[in-house]
Image (cartoon, rainbow, N blue to C red; front, side):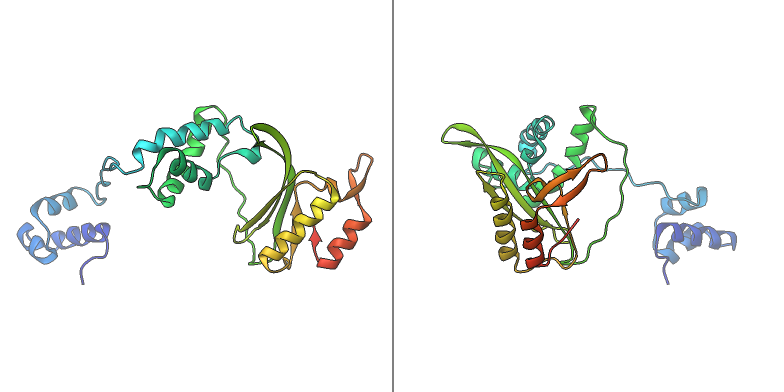
Length: 239
């Protein structure tokens, strides 16, 4: 049986050479050339493969445009930063990039976004807390202001976002008001689109529309009665 890896191959060649096999016999036994035998005899560890220069891709002409969008995101409000989907759509709509794919853009942005943050002096120490979520169990909700251009004018509206933690599937809806009715309507719309209610906790980034009072220094929240009744009706466990 031939060795499975190059390290195993080198070890086998060195072992057989110590047992007395000639260089020619080693070449025949393992189906390798003279140079490979000599490298194995001189070092037990194979030389690392030389990295080839990156090949040109159809995305190359658009990389400066993507970089420009990512740099603009550095000073943009969090909810108005470019998603990969938005970057891809802009390349198609504004630059006629019909020859590229979503996967190409996603792969480039995954690496480039943090590189641009580091270059701008805004990078963070690499650290992460692994998270695990069960399908359909948990979700996150955010309800905050967003600026949109309407009829040529900048208008402040309110974006409701309901996102499943496991799949990442999200439902969004924009409202003219941040009131409780809009908050409730956003939930009803999202649950209808998703076809059910999460079986576990729903985390809220902003619960102002559902809070009647915040108590002192403890910052303990007292829920509005309508919100308590609403989430009880749907079986929502808020966190």
